[in-house]
Image (tube, rainbow, N blue to C red; front, side, top):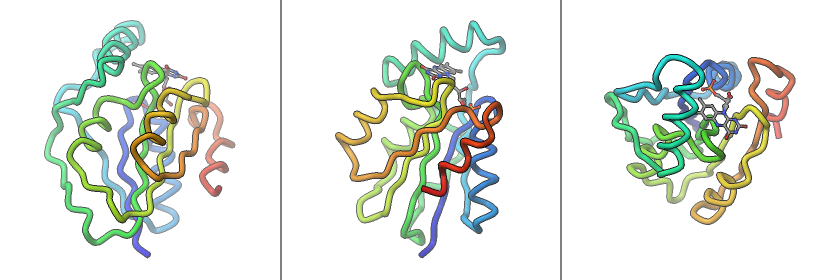
Length: 146
Ligand SMILES: Cc1cc2nc3c(=O)[nH]c(=O)nc-3n(C[C@H](O)[C@H](O)[C@H](O)COP(=O)(O)O)c2cc1C
């Protein structure tokens, strides 16, 4: 079984999840928005939170959407305003995940995001793992072994 981890990270928590999966030998692809969030926590929260609330889809730098060689896809997203991050919205809008074993890893400040989980469960038959930001709580990476 071949597995690909597709992820976005604004502030490095997703990178720790990527390193975890790299050690397992999984391929990884980082999603890069054309325009990142502004600098400064307050502005980031305002802009990112508002856009996520609108289900905005970020414009991305080149992304390889071909996942035909993989049986399993794992998608990693930070939680913004209780929702998936905007660069991940773009991926989900443009990729066909039918017939793939699917898992979502949601990393957030609080460690739980019921709105995002509800939305995922409505659309996908997927496992969802929620973790609290691993930069601050590295033990949370153990949950990925679930
Ligand atoms: C715009 C924005 C909105 C956020 N909203 C939430 C939220 O609603 N709930 C929460 O628990 N954490 C929230 N956070 C915190 C991030 O989800 C958390 O720090 C996450 O681990 C970041 O992942 P990253 O470092 O890979 O970007 C928010 C962060 C940003 C930048």
